[in-house]
Figure (tube, one colour):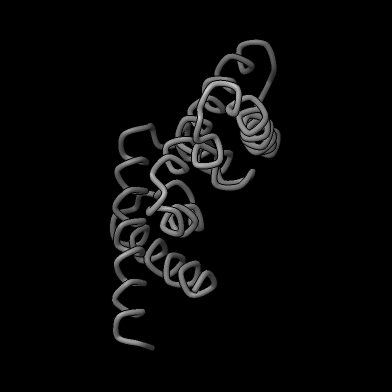
Length: 146
């Protein structure tokens, strides 16, 4: 049901952007978050890593000229870097380390990019809304038996 969830999430996200004019962390991010809503620690780890990437960017932007493609690459790069470091370090601090890892390497960077563009609260509220709608639409479709 992974492909169906991603497809439904993509449609819901595009409709949401058209209606609300707010990106829910990117177009594909809510679909991936919806895949893992039954694992809240993974969603939490992804949000934490996205925020770490955002604040790393804000720190680096004091010293480097970061805009356009360079800015986007920095977000994706640090999202992947923090996700990998989190995966390596978290077993030393948390007993359920496998539950507390990010959703992929690219998703935190894409989310951080939108957090910087649109601010944190509107982006996270939109992400949560679109992810929950996607999650329940997929569950309804599974229940109907399509």
